[in-house]
Image (cartoon, rainbow, N blue to C red; front, top):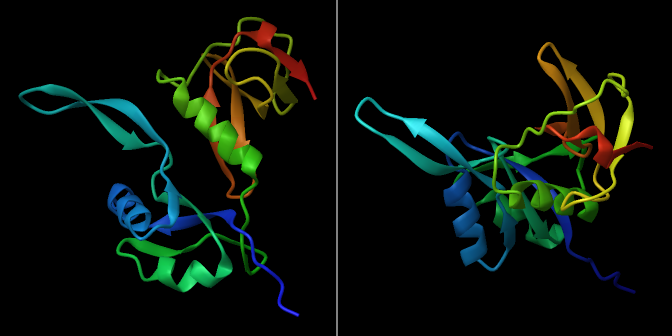
Length: 170
């Protein structure tokens, strides 16, 4: 009896500055690839320009079955799959959706926490707005407090400043 394999989200390491190319090639091959991009202001000696840059340098997300892994690894720019305990790490759908919500904000990904009611390291959940339901951890810095939205599967986080009234302890 053959067990049907289902598509799951996985993270792959990508060569330096090859994220967009690898994503395009994978999508052209019919493999769903997701590259979170954010607007970034770049300055050259003669001009300033807003460009779309990867949110997580060196990472790309693929929605694939294990049978597609060899084809993915043969793609230009792909280095390897992110692994956990020796196995290809699976990224939960909720983490990808949280990442999409953060990217869809389309503005600087830092919103200031106004009050001092939360302590560093506390786990919180966003209760309203486009990020409703996203969980993360409070991260304190000299200039204020922030929430880090952690992608536990790959150990990456995105810092988002948020008003305290949209947070609740988990």
